[in-house]
Image 1 (cartoon, helix red, strand yellow):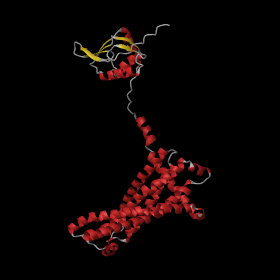
Image 2 (tube, rainbow, N blue to C red; image 1 turned 60 degrees about the vertical axis):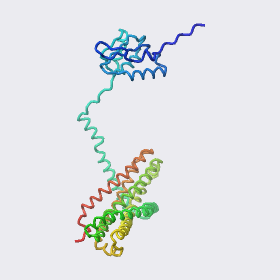
Image 3 (cartoon, one colour; image 1 turned 90 degrees about the vertical axis):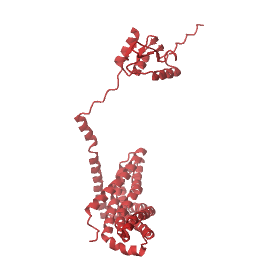
Image 4 (tube, one colour; image 1 turned 120 degrees about the vertical axis):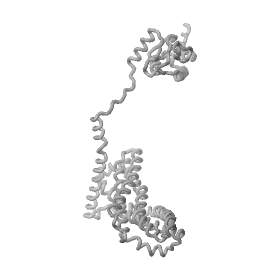
Length: 388
């Protein structure tokens, strides 16, 4: 029976560890490596971990000197390990044999570092703009196309009302309108209470307590009521619209509708837009009423203004034009929220990640558009609804 072959000695934890054993004449640190720096010798996990730990503790700066002559055997794996530890650069001082130098020279010659990214040229910047810049224009074009299709679908409904999706319309009207009344009333009531208490602190200082009716009436009926209701509906119903249509995209129901010849705009977009266009003004009016009720109760508690005086002074403080303006822009808010929700729902890809992103984008975009359109209404109708 032949004797068992002696195992190849791995780099000893004490002899292979790069460590400071002496200082040279210039005072530089000198690391001495020994053992077998080969792939076979370093194949053991414990040896590799000990060697990696020792190399990590050894400095790799340009001022460090190395002595590789005690190494018994050095292959390309060991040389690559050393070269990587030196950050692909020769140390300031290196002592080694001719064979070791040949191996390290070959490793240094064929080791490729991370190339620096070249600066972008004008052509690259124009190409990036061509890919990303017109995205907003593309979205605007698609949104305009959806509005045009909605106009055609409404014309089709007027020509043949018996073919309209009335069941879908009534279901969406209940879902978007009736089920939203409790939360909008609660939020409106609290907003009215808070606004009345904050305003009363300032009016009491000047003896102008009665003007709280003007402030609450104009701010709640004209601005806060419609905007607050629109924000709540955008987060509640706008996200629901996107999620509903997005799930239909994920489950391939939209593709099935296209195969059967059922138009998406007539059956999906138009009922939701009409439902929100009708429900949104009513929800806005409801929210404003709840906010005025909260403000009236807070005014009685803070300023001793009776509800009878509040209700009698409200028509004089808030002309009827403010109510018409609030209802008109609430209808616009409802149409835009429904269109944005449908647009992002149609753009959902058949995966759950895209569904979450689309719902988030729908809510954020709807709220942003509501605020922008409200600012546009405030500028365009700044002279409407104020008593002379």
